[in-house]
Image 1 (cartoon, rainbow, N blue to C red):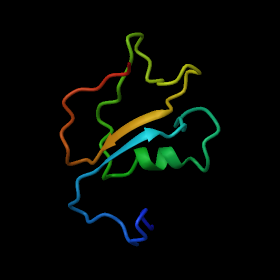
Image 2 (cartoon, one colour):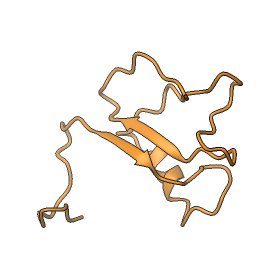
Image 3 (cartoon, rainbow, N blue to C red):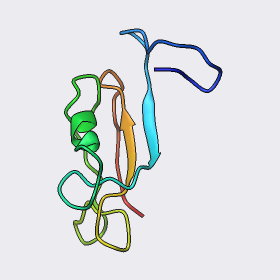
Image 4 (spheres, rainbow, N blue to C red):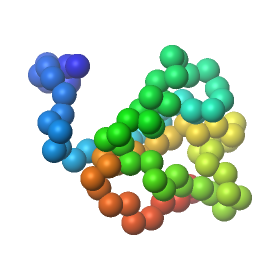
Length: 85
């Protein structure tokens, strides 16, 4: 892995992180590449205890009814609340 500044390597095991963005990858539907989002959601360092839902109880974040957007904290961060707006 190489970051934007050309530094190679990954995160130290004790590093806190948050992965966020419009990933356009639903773990159950859609045309994601190689089931990458499912691998990320199953990683032991990623906290997926609280999956946000909207007012209808859906986890989808896009108009086309797929979960496209994510905020995934490291497992050692405490999540206080979640929501889809």
